Image (cartoon, rainbow, N blue to C red; front, side):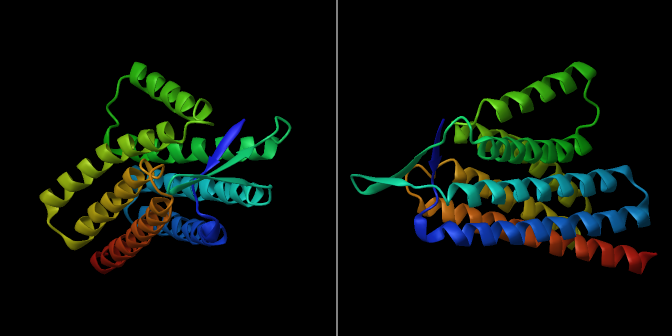
Length: 231
C-alpha cells in the first residue's frame, strides 16, 4: 500500500503536538456541551457532546498513525520545485491501516452526527445511503486522501449553513462565534484539498483547523456561562 505523507519533515513532531491539543480541545467541548445538556435537557446538545467525543477519539488514532509513520524510513524525491515524500507500507502493518481507517471513520461519524442534528427529518433510505457513503469514504480512501477531506467538507458546508441561519435568526454573540468556528473548520478542510501543490498548505490547514476548534470551545463556554446566568 502506498501512503503519501504531505507534512514537511520539519513539521512532523509539531503536527502531532497540534493534534494532541485538538484532542484536548474537543474533549473539553464534549464536556462543556454535556454540561449544557444537563441545563437544557435538549437531545441536540447530547448528540453534539457525543460527536465531539468521536472527533477527539479520531485524533487519537491519527496521532498513533502519524507517530508510527514517522518512524519508518522515508524516501524523499525532488520533483521540480516540489518535494514528494513517499513510503511503502507492507501488508503486515495492520497498525497503520487500522489507525488510518479508524481516524477517518470516527471523523466522518462525528461530522455526520452533527449533520443529523439539524437534518433529522431524513427518511430511512437516506440514513442507509449515508451509512454506505461513510463506509465508502472510509474504506476506499486509504490511498485517496482527497475523497476523505471532500466528504468532510460536504458535511461541513451543510452544518455551516444551519449555523448561519441560526445566527441570522438569533443575532446573539455565541451563535455568531459558533458559525464562525465551523466556517474556519470548513476552510481548513478546503485547504487540505490543495496540499498536493505545496506541503506548506498542510501546515496552514492544521493551524486553521486548531484555531477553529479552539474558537468553538470558547463559543460553548460562553453558551454555558449565559445558560447559567439565565437559570
